[in-house]
Image 1 (cartoon, helix red, strand yellow):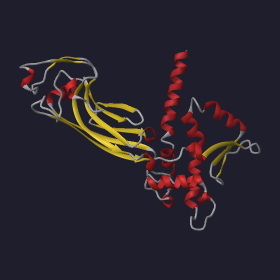
Image 2: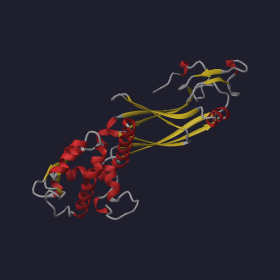
Image 3: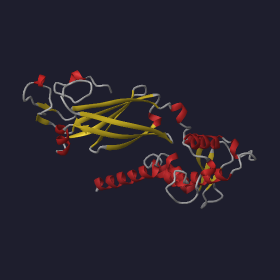
Image 4: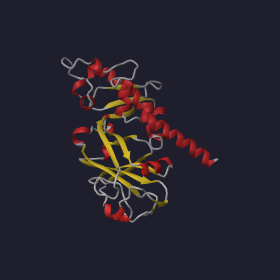
Length: 294
């Protein structure tokens, strides 16, 4: 969102004009695409006493606007802190993504005066700023995320739930075929379909994350040079490509505990875009809904 400075009747701190005789606002944005997610690391740097005082009073916040006009994606991320991490599903974006940084009012500010206002606004000039008004403009960035090269097949295309009538208490994964099939009992299958809409991430965490951890262990043990089965299946190619794009060699996958990015538990969470976190949100929403009903 490229802001037209002329739209504001009051001074705005920006490197593009001289509304302020002194002071600066900058933001550094680092981006990374990992497992289908765009991750932004944002550092805000403000050097202007009057605006810093507004922060101390809780009247303003930093804001980063992310826009992909080609697909109509627009989102504003606010922060009171000098550093902010933002994660966006890369499936919502494509090609060029524009990132703009601001300082915005979080409440109406009456009679705002700053000693650094350019004298052209009048001696002792003050202004009323509405909530959401922009007080400073930082740098703008354009990121080419190249979704076609970074995205991967939908899980629904290579992973399915199926019923095993012969083993009512068993859960197992069939890896022989282009699509992975997780076999469960009829009762579990029915539970999944009852809850997959309202508790999607809880179902992913419960059913599919353990299955993928098991599959990753099998992939680690495959001898690619001598194996003519598993490596020829579509699902194997999808996971192998995904791991490679994110700097993971299949042979380096770790089966134990720990915080390594090569740990199978961590990899499974990343592949499904952190379903455990979203599952907890679903539980909290369900609890809140129950409280409202009571």
